[in-house]
Length: 416
Image (tube, rainbow, N blue to C red):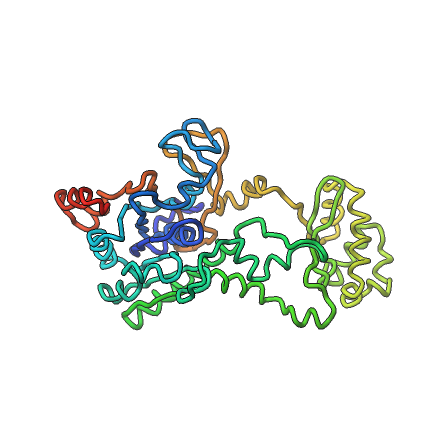
């Protein structure tokens, strides 16, 4: 699939990835690899499969529904995260299932897992076991707290809480605010992909693979640490600023009569433009607001003045007034509107997804691969594991070279 280009090659074509992941963080990492052109073989337990298969809502013959009614109703979460992947079912607790797994590893470049820390090793399918059959394999572990930390399961909201990210959102004196998107679940896989690609690049020199270990807590906390919280506290600046960032004032979200706008007027020309748009150019000469440091020191009063102006006007008038002065401003949009922005649609940074058999009256859009290349394209193969083990025969026969008798024996033994 092309992103506005007639190029046919994708950057990771030729790489084979064995995907042991489930839920969101791991599958998002392997989805990115699939969108960049890797052949991703998704391994699921024969009974149950990926947890995301049970995520409401579903899409099927009755459209979008909250509760599954038919076998071919597909969770929209699964439809999104499993795009471009080939699905096989393997019982990795059986010797026959493990034998198939190691045959896949022998032909793979990358293995990605997001089991609870230690689970892959306990099952005998971890990095050391894979390295023994394929020294070149890059084995990536994505976990809550690190591959050697056994502190238990981690979900996005747990990581938001532990990282401090949740505390930075919201107003002083009010409860912490959960970031509305699963930020830890989305950020850690990006670092995982970076780590995988770095390990592959190093393999060109060393000839061997390695274990890539990414934690959700570490990924999100590293972002929180971009701000120096100790220095801010020492300077008397609040850690929690709600809709604005007072150390950059005026910078943040302000109320209109019918919505909200984001405004950035940090530097002198922008601040003067804001004051002119407000019809209060004299504020540029006010000692409380005439310099950047003064505006920061008096941020609470300045923000109150801006809100007093903006909340009396329709959003379109606030946008028009600020744009006329060259002040960066944008409406705060609902996600449904944001996903169909012509710019992100044209670049396929968001993409339509559809049930393979049924049309929906709702325009279902999901994440694309938000990277553009001058010499390659991105996108997803038509493969989609609708059923658990959707591509068993194709992978076992065509990729591994198993004959029909061996495949039938694996099925009879319950290994697939």
